[in-house]
Length: 274
Length: 361
Image 1 (cartoon, each protein chain N blue to C red):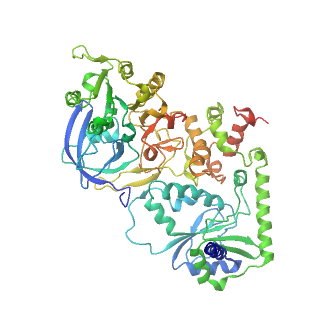
Image 2: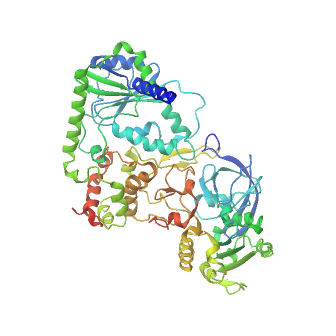
Image 3: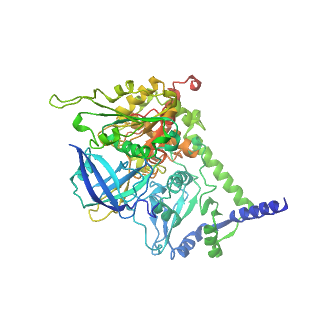
């Protein structure tokens, strides 16, 4: 950890990829490489504007650069979206605990993502793809609002070629003039279509709070054990160090005890779902 | 076996040594403080419950370390509002002495120590300030009407956590040494300090006992919650309708958060367009946007939920984390509340309205 944990590492925006009308992926090159575990998060600072938490969407095996996929949704993200290639932002971190990938060995891995919640899951998926033979199979269920809102459109053709990886996608609705031959409906409806051996499957969920809630409840209904459901919790964060208090869920601080929790750890907390 | 015995004996000797105890007459306090001024910034408790900065040109005629705790919480010296989070490049010319710290504030500092010095990393600014500060605590023989430390199993005097502790007795103060730093100060100014006698020690005991009796008298209405299991109370009654009722008068001014000696929440601000320097401000869980995330989802959108959170944080969650309440009964939150919300009343009301029958008698 840096000597002063509040001072970020300067990082250059090397490339910007337009994913959807309101989501962009930024390829960042920090002055010193930042190595992270998949599922950990970083704080990105825009001087004079503010700081927000993001989980890198790139593979942790790539050391020199780091990708973050950002939806334009608030004060900081609006400013980030205005930035051009070559500009400098600050990165603090990585913080928290990522996905315990070793615990998924010899199991089926069900990944459920919603919207820009696919960002941390892309990093996880890239980590799993590096070592596919260690898992029984990997199933990705991904939902977006419309076909246009799907992130990483250019990566799906490649992923479809990976042996042992099944991909199911849904959109909430599809405009009439757009072609969509996959599922229409909220992402939870994909859970009825995918075939997993529930006893030997871990489920990893990331998306907007409402989607996380209903996906988790549906997984429980289907017979998943709370300890086999991994949630990437989203909370308001400022320090990332377990001190400032904002991200608390009961006695937990999401930034240091999470952001990845099992549902078993959190299910008794009354303010779990925002 | 023998070696262990020797080690234990050494440890005992060391502990004895740290518990050095002296006496200083009242008239010598000013001269004693003057000797410290060259190397220290001295902030002392005044008659109007402030910490005033001592300067040699003025007499300490407003000094009153025998009074009730300062209005400003002790945290303000270590966890500074609107602080630039840049590490000081060189050591301070003078270290600080806070003179007249009460036990409620010293106990609250333990929560801040756990947060800022524990966990995954040390907060460098908090560490810097605490290392550069000497704490001269003092007993609290005149508790105020909002004080309720004894209901929470606290004491109106300190037994640890200080560098020096001053206990008012007849004609002077018993001075107890808590650390090597404190001992050094006494040794350097030994001309002012006399040996303490048995009579003075008995006098201290009596004054301390009287203070506890005063607190019990002030809080006789709340005797039913004395030394209660507040963690169980707040945890078991999280869903009680009582929270909606009791929070109706709260205007969310956040005064209780700011004045509380154990509230530690903050946010970081990036004010400079030129660099990555951060400014830290105190924050408050009563603010609507405190826990709101991008996109608008909020785990505590309603006033009663944020009101309840303050109690759950102090009596339930922090007890789980640190085995202590994040409330030490200083009563500042009641004093500052424009709605006259009394933390004692809220808790005893929660007990009366508890959903679980075990509290009904």
